[in-house]
Amino acid sequence: MATKALYPGSFDPITYGHLDIVKRAAQLFDELVVAVAVNPNKQSCLSVATRIGLIEDCVAPLKNVVVQQFEGLTIDYAKATSAGVLVRGLRAVSDFEFEFKMSQMNKTLDASVETVFMMAGLEYQFLSSSVVKEVARYGGSVDKAVPPMVARALTDHFASTANVCSA
Ligand code: ADP
Image (cartoon, rainbow, N blue to C red; front, side, top):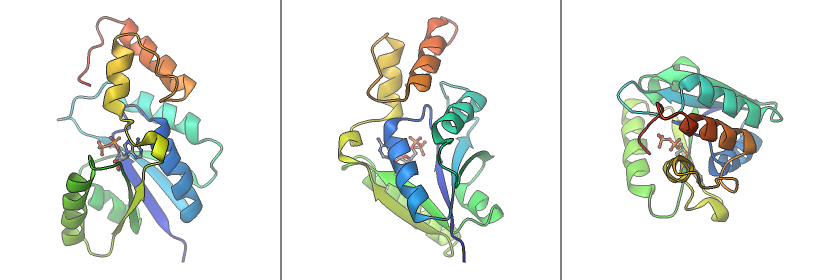
């Protein structure tokens, strides 16, 4: 049976660390959905439409990867879309406790959906969307952290003084 996996996150913005996970997960599963969480209670920097557009550009060469948005519990979205696997990336130390708790909770909510953790690539262990935003906000180069179109979107975003967001 074909295995469909969901890779959920804010992706505000997508980084080379996320993309490394996407590429590796796309080789493991038949179909991979990069699922952008829409959370009205969480302040984001880039709009959902912008985030999705950037991810779509980045994953265009990967034929079994699609991008979708969802609101609400990840586990409910997995169920509704018949995804049997949740993919999460793990960076050294920082992600473990939260991700462990989350996967236990998801298991309690629906034992049929398995969370699969993939270790972040060595070069991406300390890369986060928050750090990228912080650097971009002050005009620093994020070329080593994100694809060129993402860097441009951040530059455009911060060029407008009206656009402030939490890192
Ligand atoms: P969330 O809001 O769920 O934390 P993120 O967009 O920050 O969403 O991250 C989505 C997923 O990608 C999470 O599993 C996170 O641990 C993982 N991730 C974030 N940054 C990296 C990175 N540099 N390398 C590998 N995985 C990462």
